[in-house]
Length: 114
Image (cartoon, rainbow, N blue to C red; front, side):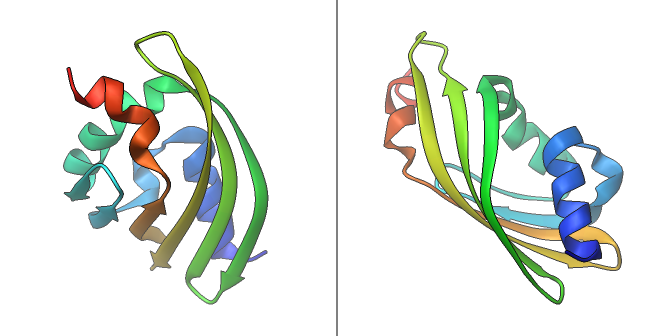
């Protein structure tokens, strides 16, 4: 894998904001965000629920990285789930510029209703 995958993987492991472009754009099934502060705020509660991640496959095409993975989450309700996720990330100038995440968000319905 190349530099784009390295940056994506490092961010997935560390959530180091120095790896993000100032105007990062995030699109997911539950929220959207633009900019580092907005992105981290939108992601903070989600990151807290994550108990494990397993990368199943990853593809890189230039600055585009597609990662297919399973994520284990424990909801505030106490229930635990494994979610299958596809993520398309775009890296420009050594920074994560775009992050598009696709998964079935229905598992979060009990949390979103409160």
